Structure formats: C-alpha cells, structure tokens
Length: 316
Image (tube, rainbow, N blue to C red; front, side, top):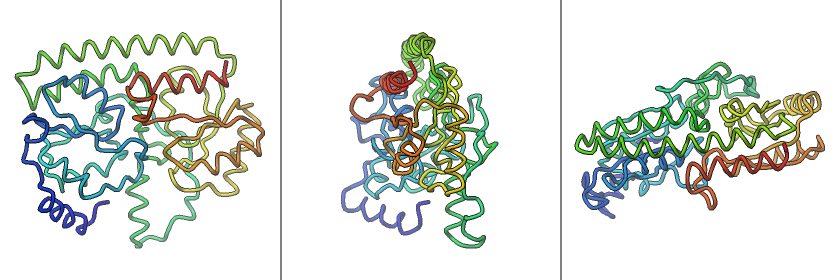
C-alpha cells in the first residue's frame, strides 16, 4: 500500500524532475499504463504506434507486493488508461493511480472466465493478530490467494487471452476512437499469433509421458489445466511467506504420492524453500516464469514457449 509519505515524495519528485503533462511523453501520444509484462506486450502490439504504452512493474520484479519509487510513479502521471489484472493481484496499481492521476482502470481478469484457487494457504494460524497494521497489509496483499477465491493468473492461458486481446482493443478505442479500426486490425493479428502458440504448445504436450509437477507459487494453474498437467502441491501458496514444517511435510507426501517429476521455482521469488524440498524429495528443481520481460522472454509468446521448454525438459 502506498502511504501518504509516498504521495508527498511523488510531489517532490515531480517538482524536481518535472512530471510530464498528460500526453506529453511519447511524442504527445496518450499514455496507457499496464501493470505486468504479459499484458503490456499484448497491449503494446494492439496499440501499434498510436499510444504510448508503459510497463508499470519492472522486469524481474514480483507481481506480489510491488513497492514503486516516486520516480516510477511520476513517469505515469496523466495516463488516460491503466490495464490491470484485477482480482486483488495488482492492487499496488490502484494506489499508483491515485498518486499519478491516471484517469481510469480496466481490470481484465474480472472480464474473463476464472477458476478458483484450490490450494489451502499455509500458516493461517500464524498470521498477526487482528488490529495490527501488519495484519491489514497481509490481508490486502494476499486476499487473492485465499482458497476458493478467483485465481488471477488468467494471462497464462493463451486461449483465454485471445478474448483478452479483444477486450484490450475495446478499451484502447474508448480513449482513442479514431484508432478503433487500427486496434481491431492489430488485435486480429495478435490473436492469430496466440492461436498458433496455443496449438504448438498443445501438440508438444501430447508427447509428454509424465504429467505431475510441484510449483513454487500458485501461478501456473491456468497453464496446467490448458495442457493437462497436474500440480500435486504448491510450496508457497502465499508469496514470500515461508512454509511451516507441517506444510513442508504435506508437500513431501504429495510429491511421493503423486510421483511428481520435478519442482519448479520462480525467478521473482526466493527459491530457498524449493531447493530444500526438491533435495529432500530427491526430484529435479526447475524454473517457471509467470511474468517474463527478461532476456529470452521479451514477448508473450516467448514467455510461454520458454515455460514450455522448461516443462518439456522433465516431462517428456
């Protein structure tokens, strides 16, 4: 959560570095702020050269509990639209909007079919007592990870995101009606690429002889469901909260019972607990990236292809 001190810091930053007036940055094009890289890449391609599409979450940072600097907030000042996942995933963007005077937000996850979170969060009994500031922050940051809540990681299903691309095009046309035909044309091309990507991954997955894995965080459920992969357990259902000894024992039992092929960490999170569990269970440790934007994962298609490569290395 961005506190009042952050707002004051942003005002100071604006006075010292000069906040761009609405539309000034990017050659006078309207600014669109997009929370995470996969949505940013798709939005930028639909927008073409008509809009200044800006990524909010820096590459390599976790989508959970992001804490932006005043300079990062200031560069978004005056954006006409922000595109977020919603579903309590990127609530930090809501706070940024208030400080950076972003006109409106579109939460794409709330407009797509979702699946419920099936994993019971760890350490519920160890949460801070009610009434403490820490408890309020914990609830705000992890509400989306409660069992039964809608899973917000919708962007990891390329078939689902074909619908998402149409929704993005509609939103861009609302702030730039003159570009409606351009956005529709670009969206058609992007959807064709996602359809081809989906077909390639589906075809590759048919050859996999193993189907069960363990993931570090609960981000891969949509991808797993789409390509018939079973997730036996999740090491950290609450990102950044280390599992208890009792929970680790449950994970180890699930690995043994499900004959899991590998455990996969994530580059944005501490993989220490995953390394320990993989060693204890005697299974391979791999890596899956839900966010991308790093080298070799500079497009949506490259990100999902990279993840497919990592899975294929242990499942084929």
